[in-house]
Length: 95
Image (cartoon, rainbow, N blue to C red):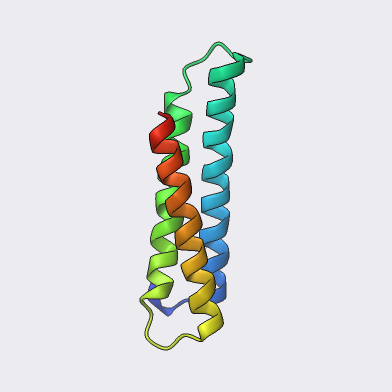
């Protein structure tokens, strides 16, 4: 089944899950950088977190580009794009 044929609610749920997981992974890498809990490189963990955030952002944009969606779904998609965009900007500036 094509991604454009899936339900908007399911796509927004997946976007939230990928975005939230990416934010948590980046926060773990950032916290470990400052507090040195583990003596391990945090670059790969940070990269996976940013990749997950980009994937969540792309799903939210995909939902926004669908043709016949309700205003509530459109507003949720716009909020998701804003949150993930700001978090990506923050983590890029922190690196």
